Length: 174
Image 1 (cartoon, rainbow, N blue to C red):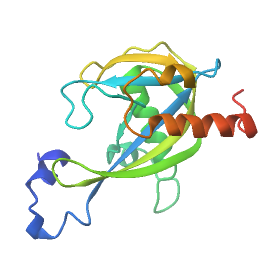
Image 2: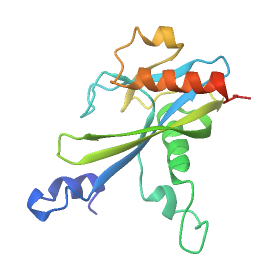
Image 3: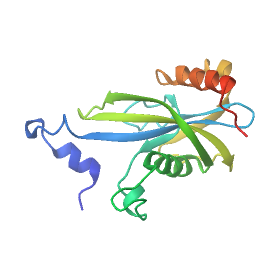
Image 4: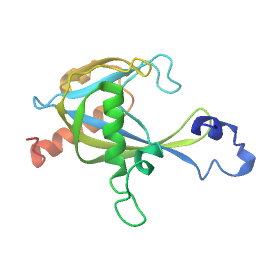
């Protein structure tokens, strides 16, 4: 069986596919009832951003939707939310409630393929953090001020500020 990673890495640029094929990842700006944000330190083994602090999340997999019944005759709905719940649980052991969209961004991976990242706001519902240490090696619940002391991936802090502004204006975490 060829995995997605092997398949994508073996497609040459001459195939004209790199411009059409993208990884899709979903990350969670997870906020707890105390108003602190969950940040996690990436493993030194990670291909991109090793040892940097980030929001937990990961790549969408086809199994995030095809293993469940379709929501309409042709479609699966809320796939970003389902992917985020799976990834947060796999990486941290937490259960979350997805509240909405925060931001999106794109980057080019070392293999030349793009990754589109969807950032979602989530509320910590239950569980204690137990990290999947293959991917993440540390975690912290931080305030905006405390986050300044961490080596964050670029734009993580700005997304926390955006959520904090929205929270003060209209989002209420029950």
